[in-house]
Every structure is written in structure tokens, then in C-alpha cells.
Length: 288
Picture 1 (cartoon, rainbow, N blue to C red):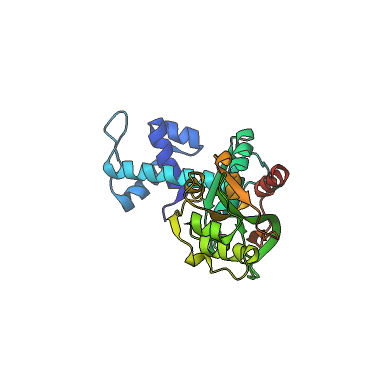
Picture 2: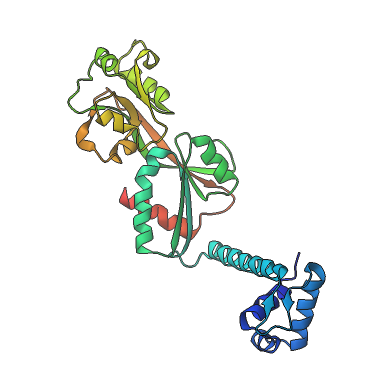
């Protein structure tokens, strides 16, 4: 590993252009700056052409300068992540299923507009990926539709979200025969969601797998597009439906007793949430 003080002397030398000015800026002797550069060159080869004015970097010198800049960015990023005193700057990282994510992402962007120095990192993912990402510290906050039983995680109730039967506007969907005539618009969780909801509304039905499949999309923001065009019905969580931009072209069909899922907030149990994350969660809870 390269000595940080040597790297600092090299980066300063490149910046100010002379050994004398570098020594003055760093508060050390000119001989010390020269010694630091010599140590680096013993490991990496020639870095600067001393006969040139201003100083000219060799290819190795340019590569080292790029490395110094990467190290500086990484240190600043680390300091930003670890600084918990100012909740108006730094990163907020959240990973969630698609439906609740469609609801939360615009709200978090509104928070970022109030505090532009915040950096929002959000990813849509299924439950298994959410749990893995939080456990391995890739994201600070996770949301899941199933409560995890891993002792390394804290799980708290965050929201509730019912499943909805959604059909084209003006189309009849009150009988199983109506659904059979419309056909099903499937998605990655479609079969499971539809089975859970329709078994309540139509007990003893033939099963969603026996309905004509009129389409499939794995993009949650697009699943309702064929429904709005009259091409079939689907079953989705409420927040996915609310995020759809063509509400006038779809309708929610009463499907008996509500089927409501709990959304669980998870984070690592060994350390508390950062002040930034806590502020973001308070903002979300007040805005939903």
C-alpha cells in the first residue's frame, strides 16, 4: 500500500508545480517532498520530468495522479457517509419491492429537492434480494412484504397495502365468466397474487392458470398499460395502481373481503439507523 503522505506530496506537487511551493503548502521541508517523490518512484518508476517547466508527468505519473484523485473522492465519500451530524447531506439508500417503491421514490425526490445535498439511492427488488442487500450493508433500509426471521435484522411494520383486482374502465368483471372473457395480464408475481385474491372472491374457481393469458410484463410501471387499453385484467398491490398515470382508463373491482399485506421495514440490528435515514422515514410516514 502506498504511503498516504507520499501521495499527498505528489498530488500537491502536481497541483502547484514546484517542490518549493509544495513544501510551503504542506508545512514540511523541500527535502521531505523530494524524498516522498523518490520513494514513490522507487516503487512505480519515473513519475515526473524534472527538466520540464512546468512539470510534466510520465504515463506512470498520470496513472498515479488518477489514483490519488480516486482515493480523495473515496475519502470524501466515506466522510460523508459517516458524518451523522447534518441530516441535510449525504446518502439515503433504500431497496424495496416495486409497488411500494413506486409510491416512495417520488416522495424521497421531494425531500431531496428540499435538501439538494442529499443523495438518494433506490433499487426495486424482490424480498430475497432486499434482505440480502441489507444484511450485506449494500443498502441501509429495506422494505419487504414478508417479515424476516433473521436475528441480524430489525423488522418493524411500515405500511399496509391491499391487493386489487383491476380491469379496463367500463368492462364487466363481477363474475368468473367475465374474467375468462377479459383474459389475464400476468407479471412476475401475478399468478400468486391473483390466486390469493380471487380464491376469496370466487371460491371454487377453476384457477387463474386456466384463464386466457393476454399479456405479460416484468416492468411494474407498465403492467397496467394493456389493462387501460382494454386487453385484460390483472391483480396488483394498491400503490402500483395509484402510480399509474391513466387512472381514468382503469377500474378497481370489488373482490370481497380486503386482502391486505403488511410492508415491513428492515435494517441491521447491530447499529442504529443514521440520522439521515431516520429523517427520510419520518418524511415518508408524514407524506404517505
